[in-house]
Length: 172
Image 1 (cartoon, rainbow, N blue to C red):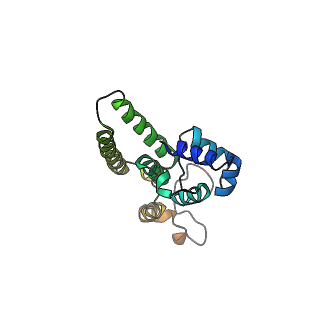
Image 2 (tube, helix red, strand yellow):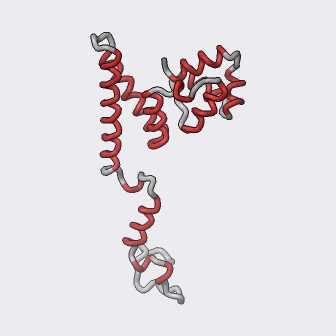
């Protein structure tokens, strides 16, 4: 049973509307609908606790291996990462549809595939252009270290002379 199916089942069992559950958990009705029908997952780990409290269940019941995988993907890589993780899970499920593997074997293989996903994401970070990295501090340090001295306001001539810098014919 998926996260959305669990939420829907418990919401109905408790007699809550989507609006009521949304108000109880501090999200919008659209968010609840997305959980139940669109296969979306909470991006915030703390939200699982609020949902579990509102629905009167254990937080771990709501989370399965796939839910933890999707939540981590959303937290670390945003919406695009979550979409990539969902596509990865869908293609993995499709590989084993109609096969002779036991559910335990499928779970074991799924866990290995999830580990491969994280390894691929970590390896991809090495090849990600610097401008896309979240670590702005590192980018700032590189900019400061590589900026020509002539562009540094601290080294500017107080009289405003540009000392022969070519500005493409523009007046500075």
